[in-house]
Length: 266
Picture 1: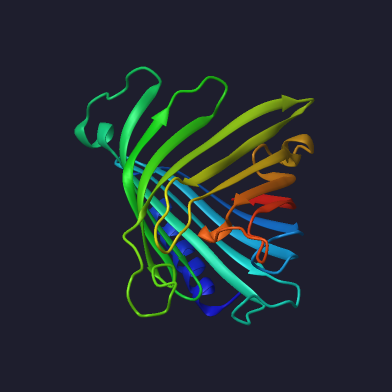
Picture 2: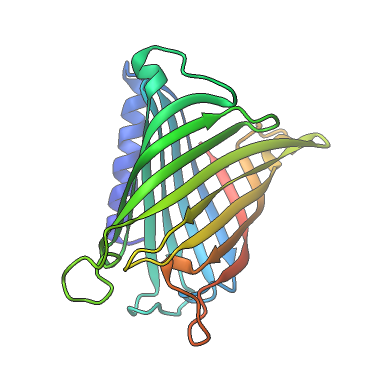
């Protein structure tokens, strides 16, 4: 891992440990490490191995989700000559129901939130997102979240023509995420994931959508190691116009691939 990723993971681990030990507004947290291996990726090298750190937590004011991907390209290089890269997102959400101490549920809506997200990666790949969020009560799902973001790119994403000035103002994005557990024999299958759909074009970022579910078998429960600890399965990735780059005959950016997955929670 490069220095930026190592520093971020170390800082996150220290912060989470301090939170767990201190008398804090933290209600719950879950952390995991995943290893993925897949082929047929687009824009970047076709074969990739990825190590992912994820953190999710609930607070008396809302919730937080963080992930960091460290990608390895099996000796190949991307367009800027790197044989690896990293990318991450930090998404805190403020619960209006918790902050106001009022029940805001109505119909399928359990809570209304103010959602924000920061996307970061190598080569100044950055974006800032903000908008309304909703927790939904959908039968059969462990959770179902729906966020509407106005996204503003920064760094290289905002200056595709290289003139040192932002090329556009931003675009709207719809981002549902979900999880559902299906009993299978003496264990369970967990189906979770997200969809990021940038619904309009910005001068620097073409409309695109990324459908990214995981289907995982609870191996820990099956082997009596403990439920919800060790999963094996696959991650599917369909990305239309990946990274906001319009697909063309000369440069294919429509991605349709799957990766083998091992995930450990702690």
